[in-house]
Image (cartoon, rainbow, N blue to C red; front, top):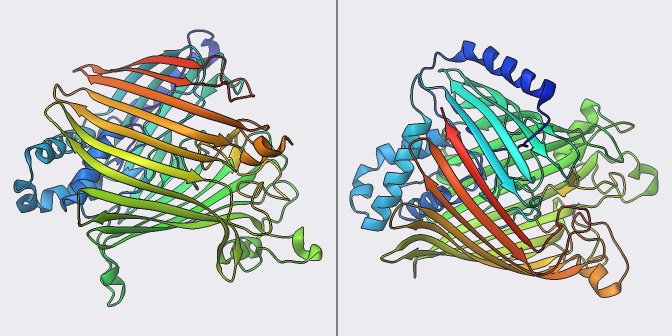
Length: 508
């Protein structure tokens, strides 16, 4: 029971055959317009709504894990419906958050209401630095989408066309999928953006920085605690498993991206997530069942001898993240630690993230504020730099279509960010974020170029971004801007220090 809604991008010209294909595909999807009850998921495109969910989670109204996105509406709405007494005791500001989440969930889960939308966005240049809540990627984008669901089926079809695409691909099908519900599980074929972790501006293992990869995902629908004697003490839990194809131009073509996440909430104030991802297979690489078993178990990772290096099953990342709602004041501490290699059965050569989130409320604003620190070099004494996201076999690294699959900043970067996300008293949503730091630190210090998806020579930078959005009966209007004090990108995505963008999403 799920669904996705929209995102995407496209252009102002050159529809041609692609437009005809879009019309045909939309007509085909009209066969699925008879909808019964189903619960969709929340995608990574709405940061203010996420802020509401986290505020309700801290208040004890939402008790399921909330730091693995897409996030299932079914689990969220189930908590809201079964905790009316807790909801009645909420402050006025949290009552507003509850009303917004309920309204969004009820709209997303309406019966017999297939959703169709047309989205248009324009900007003066491509989006270089992407954070949670960002949707547009290129200069001009137009997206046509249709979604619907039945008791056992959910689908979303999006086709986008772009003007002056940075990656030279004018047509994209990001966030398109077909899903089947089986018991408490959902199997999805397609591609959707993932955000694994508590961070707001970046994540170390999976973020929305790179385009989503096409593949198969298996995800738990509801998050009730296990009934087994020992496991029941771990609280509500969720899991997400996927395998997808890296179909861009790479050193090893057609490599696979594999991921597994398990989220636990043993205490109302504490959420813990265990993460694992890996690049595996591809042209000229082992792709047998034995190789996959070695990948999953980690038995053959870092074999330590030249004779077996060539047969290593893949390029693996593993880590843990947490979010702890501190009891002393209205704030939450969160962090993430991800290792590039394995030693003694545990992740090694670790990068880290640490953040503090506060609830903010005044007569004119309610939402959250955060401060976040990312260090994507590793703590290894033997090799601190050029480790994370790089690999001696998969030379393209942990990247897809020229962007890091993990951190927005890519490897060997130290960045501090502060921000505020929420709503004005008239219902408009606003965001403001500031980031400052160093990209590709080792090259910046040594002057020697090294592999990086933003700058191979390193750069110091300061960046300020703002976003305003208003909802109407017919859809949404959004205006956003970002100023970066240096032209840090060397791959053609940043032509000016100032990026300005506007987008309209029309529902019909």
